[in-house]
Image 1 (cartoon, rainbow, N blue to C red):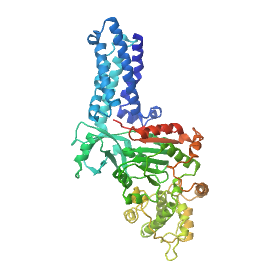
Image 2: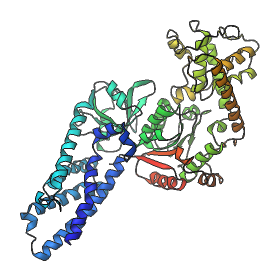
Image 3: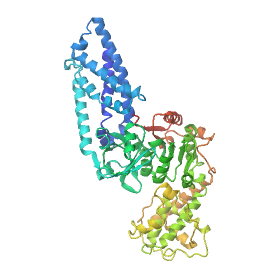
Image 4: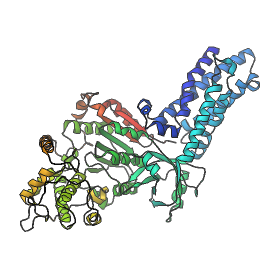
Length: 602
């Protein structure tokens, strides 16, 4: 019995240490940007839960063996008269009060009570400091050195968070929906630099409860990068109270602590991403899309039942133009017609069903890797819409005499990229939509294009006018990508199109590069790549729908090389611990693609 009790005690040491280290928020934020991050376990919350289970079960074995041994020796009095007995009793009681409500009775006990019981970890840690006598070293007694060190470290970490990672937002904009509250706040430069790419933060409303801090995912305001947004869903007592107090307009202050890295930070590791979100879990996905949409292929799968939440995020979100954006609406309330119209002719699909991940994820991978199921082919009219929008942009540029010809070309290239296309590919289609009654665009012709390099900045005088006349396609779904393109077109001389296509700034080329022989050579390579792309697009399956069953998808994905191909794909999840996550784990294992989870399932 003594051997078993000692072995179980030593077995617990790694988990006893890690259960504290996983909650060192400032330390974790610092290490996430260092070389050490490559060797760290990324899902710290999951590791914390695992360590909690090990401690609970192992401490039961450890305590049972000691009590049985003392009972057989007639020394049960040591339980109250010896330091190891008293501290052991404190440890086992606090362990049950900390773990059981969080793991077993989670649905039956209010969050506030469970969180309060979790603070018994201080009793747990202090008792560990005195549990084994120092005289037992080297056969034991390490508690007296290890756990005081961890407690001091934890205290300094909390102090750093309170003093240097916490700030007051004096004026906060609140937008109250039926299902929750969306808040927008301007954060400091320190917060912007540390929280580039999303993450999460702890929020306190002093006018609700000064002692409660709750974690929420962050995402940037697409129209104001210095602002951060949080969506707070009305679920528990505290969020319901906040929602009730914000039924009238208010700009009351909040305290925010953070930002801290989340498992969604792992998105940077993958060229191809499948973001799966449930309900409010869409918020970290939006941060990833904003951070990586220009350089990576991002596919979104969002299961949502609240029409108000769906409408809000379609109005304010910035989604990827190249990947699938699949919204599975599971609510009973019918969606308003203008919401359906807003996503017409875009790569956003609203499906009135639950997502079948067994087919959905293999289909997405199959569609991209085989070239037969990209979003471009699902939307045959999207390119025509983009061409017509480019006509409108040309007309707007014609009204701005302050812009030079080079500025206009750069603007057209950026505008086409915002629509998800290379400008030369759209310009090639302008020839078929020429109205002979219109005049060519002023200021942009083959005879007026100089040989000077492209500028790196645009004139600021006309920026506001351009945005007012024709907003950029990079501003929100319903504001841009979902809007109907105007049917008014203007003519462009064929020579002008040829000149524009030859001078277009293509991906990988910076504005400002001179048009020397090296550049012209690169343009030839780009045109060759474009021809290969067109050939590939021509072989795609028309109206490929990844939410439908494709029998060839699963065998195709299973035969992909795990090291070369599948390693470039990653699945990231944010949401509750429900059936969706259970199915996602099974699918990720079957397709052999790494899954990262973000969940604050308190």
